[in-house]
Length: 127
Image (cartoon, rainbow, N blue to C red; front, side):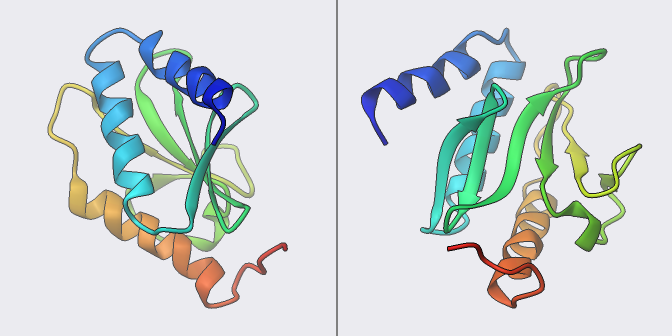
């Protein structure tokens, strides 16, 4: 990743107030630690995490509550009670309370399920 891209990504995180900043940075590290083929970029103004150049998820904050969440690009294929579709047809989100301990096992399980969509071919990898 270029130095300029890294600065743009870091700016997103460091513009946030605490405890949201720390929460988002922890989520970032949890996501990239799941798999060596995960890379981070920025799309639509938000951090985007890709698996072998295919969008896995994004990090964002709710406009009304400022609560962080992970947005899963292929959420329609994921069945987990902690995921919300809302009005979305394709994507689902996992909300995180920045004032509480992160539910690490739940986050990791959902991320692994999302990665499995690509690994098993349920969602075809674009090359």
